[in-house]
Amino acid sequence: MESAADGDGCTTPDVHLARVGYALDGDDSCIADARHHAAAFLDRASDDQHLPVSARAKDLTQLVVSELVTNTRKYAPGPVLLELRITAHTVEITVWDSDPKIPAARATDPSRIGQHGLEIVKAVAEDFEVRREPVGKRITARIALADGTGHL
Image (tube, rainbow, N blue to C red; front, top):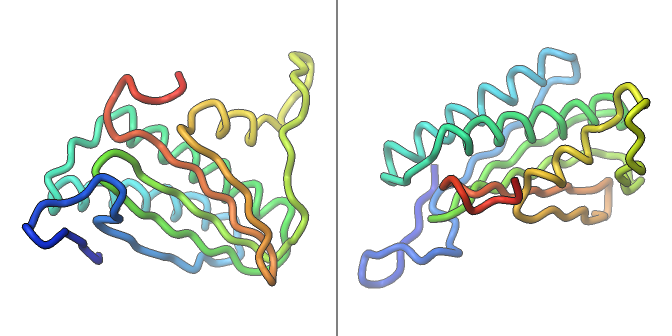
């Protein structure tokens, strides 16, 4: 994991204190692998950086990773890249895929079964963005590390 600090040895809130990236296999087991990587990343960040990572933040991070990687596996051909970064206050989850089509959350429909992943991610994330890349797109969601600072 990479670490960053300012000149006096103190970390600044918007600086990425640690980051890690994973190329995920193309089969469905990559979804569980991605959740495992996210949990392990938060555990290491908590231990190494002494950050207060709440159980809620860990659960929501795994949920967001699962939803984003599932959508990528379902709708985009080819490889999936997962990047996790952490600041003093948030964990940033970025998933890249090769499909340039920008996803959109669907209108609320209580009778619809499935296809709620993007709605869930947007509901629990502090921040959400989709950025088209020269090849494909990047979807990034940020989750608060401490309880009581997110959307829910």
